[in-house]
Length: 234
Ligand SMILES: NC(=O)c1ccc[n+]([C@@H]2O[C@H](COP(=O)([O-])OP(=O)(O)OC[C@H]3O[C@@H](n4cnc5c(N)ncnc54)[C@H](OP(=O)(O)O)[C@@H]3O)[C@@H](O)[C@H]2O)c1
Image 1 (cartoon, rainbow, N blue to C red):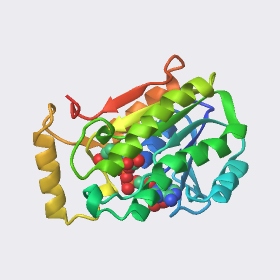
Image 2: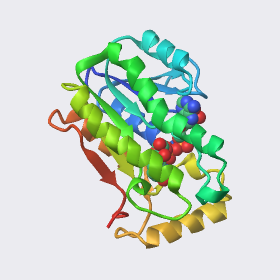
Image 3: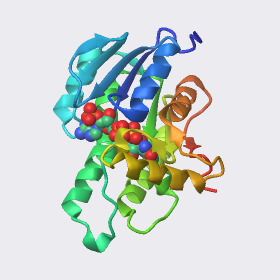
Image 4: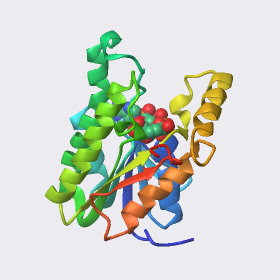
């Protein structure tokens, strides 16, 4: 085991699935005490990982999470909504606001509640996505959320120093985020997306998790956007 996060406490909000679950496993393998948080989780310990319930749209729920865990070293935020791609003209803006509320306002709410407990030498890792800078018709919600997250990551890196703040920007990654598609449709979508990439395939959650581990471990990294997208932005 590489024990670089030995003795550190890492909270992964969004740790119940996909990229967040992979970050939790990677951090635990490097010696961290990991707390996973998400709506579908209950308080408990399984396979050495502690879990706690949280709903990022609810400030009181976040307050309870940080009170329960106490002092900690690294916050990882991967919670994200399921977004339906649609042109602006056809979009229900209340639904769009709910999407922003989970990923963008949820991150700000989480950071605000976390700060009294987050070590001065600790870090915050947020999650954007390549659509923040890769523009496509029908994707204004993801573009807006992800671009704002990247701007905030940099702004907060200034404001919250010496705590470090970084943003991981994934490309298309095979996670349960696509579980709503029928298997055949999902595999066809991954094959098509992968064929358009320099690396010829879509990514795995473990590959993206490595970016968060880097952001937590590297004490000289702050205000960075870490692109892990198989060349999707090239
Ligand atoms: N997969 C991709 O291709 C891709 C590409 C670019 C960016 N991203 C970004 O990467 C992040 C992780 O995505 P993923 O692919 O790992 O998706 P995922 O497997 O669907 O995970 C989404 C996570 O968000 C949590 N979540 C949703 N609403 C929440 C709420 N109200 N309160 C607390 N947690 C909430 C879910 O936990 P509960 O259900 O337990 O609440 C779940 O753990 C997202 O921000 C996504 O936008 C993903």
